Image 1 (spheres, rainbow, N blue to C red):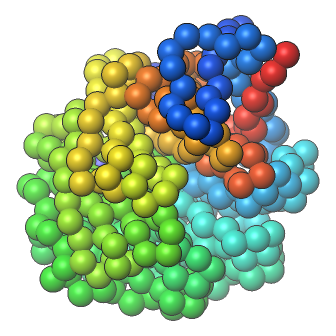
Image 2 (image 1 turned 30 degrees about the vertical axis):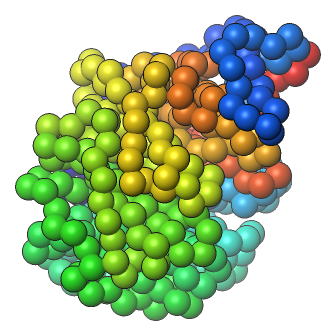
Length: 370
């Protein structure tokens, strides 16, 4: 969305690069059910451990593969990779892309990754590497003036989608069947019409997410209602549902989604403008996105990224320019544990969780236990 270029400048004014506050006790649930309110002896709120990247780009794309391997991408054509858990980072940016904004990256392992640059017309591009970023191949360049690509997501190592703001009144979906080596625009007849002003937010690489081998969700805003689109057939046909996330303004809507399975999902967003309230910045679904309900204690402000914590069935983390929050109740209640600035967050199956944001900030989550 063209508005996305303004996000960096506006939200930077609200960022507080502060250290995490002193930890307090929190509940960690068992696998048997959602955690109740209250405290549990021995557990502490988590914290972020900053990793020096050596760059100052704003990193809105993030793709951790394991505890050791993480990819990040952002402004000024920047793509980074670590293979030692963040002790050192390689700048593996594609040559000649310094004017592009790589708002999303999807990585398959230490060697293979796909990055998406956003923008109107030809600024929306996709690049792929198979050698850890030593060389890149441009595999897609947008030739539709109305299109503006925001996010990319994969079901597996071969099948993936990218989404654009509406073209001729409908969101546009791009598909690959060969790991991002080639892309085709899908027919638009299975996509519900967009609302006036509706578009995606290229804020964290999480406006398009998958779960399982066929389900995919698309987050939207900028219109009178904040909505989430859902496809059960890898983007061929879609349904759409309203959410309680703040809407009614181009700066408001659903900014990020996370699904731990095809039924249980989280949505975060709000109003990204500094100082503007976001009273219902979090929502949850238990039916695959057909219905959404407001968190009883939502994040206290706009949040741009969200992820489930692996092996803790009801735990998730949300991040934004003014802080990070954690839930142990499946998104019903959230609690702030850090006031630093991050734009995106993601976890791996081996319980390695990472966040990235402005000024080259990348951090790994530390889960406390005394």
